[in-house]
Amino acid sequence: MLRGEGVARGDGQPVLLVPGFLAGDASLTPMARWLRELGYRPARARMRVNVDCATKAVERLERELEQLVERHGRGAVVIGQSRGGSMARLLAVRRPDLLDGIVCLGSPLLDPLAVHPLVRIQIVAVGLLGTLGVPGLFTRECRDGDCCALAREQARAPFPDGVRFVSLYSRSDGIVDWRTCLDPAAELVEVGGSHVGMAVNPSVFRAVGSALAAASAPGR
Image 1 (cartoon, rainbow, N blue to C red):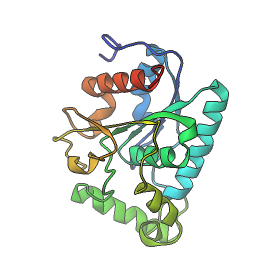
Image 2 (image 1 turned 90 degrees about the vertical axis):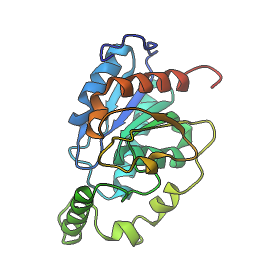
Image 3 (image 1 turned 60 degrees about the vertical axis):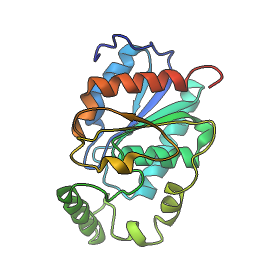
Image 4 (image 1 turned 120 degrees about the vertical axis):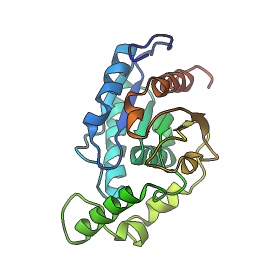
């Protein structure tokens, strides 16, 4: 499956890959390579580590998405793992005109803090460092303050028509409470395996391939 057996080939559609919390572009390198071999045009989010303020991060991703769509002359698909999937949903609400679909991999869409206690400690630690002035990190204000008020509102906003929305979840995730992946607006696909392993999981790749094929199908 990592070589693409049994999956419909792509037709050059651009795909923006967004990594999860505490991860960077390198975490999705196997998927990017697979997508390229399958006939898609994967693009990286230019994130070394996904720990920035959600508003700033999504604004940067929106610019990347605009350039990607302009470069290829067609709508894109965003694939996001964990926090990256939550950002993909924000992008769809903000700019449905740029997107044919989004695919979320183990993303806590209904509650960003519905995660393992050890991960929650890491979230608190990053927020504390950001609040103390370390650049490039989200702060405590991002959760309740004005800086991310619009992002919080958009995270709860109705999902736009005309954009395919697929959310993959695993009951054995181990990091994210799988129930928070069950966004009512999404097409829900259950897979096996761990949270981190979704980036290299053959069943995930199969589901991603199906979602991409459906998103680019005529008359979707």
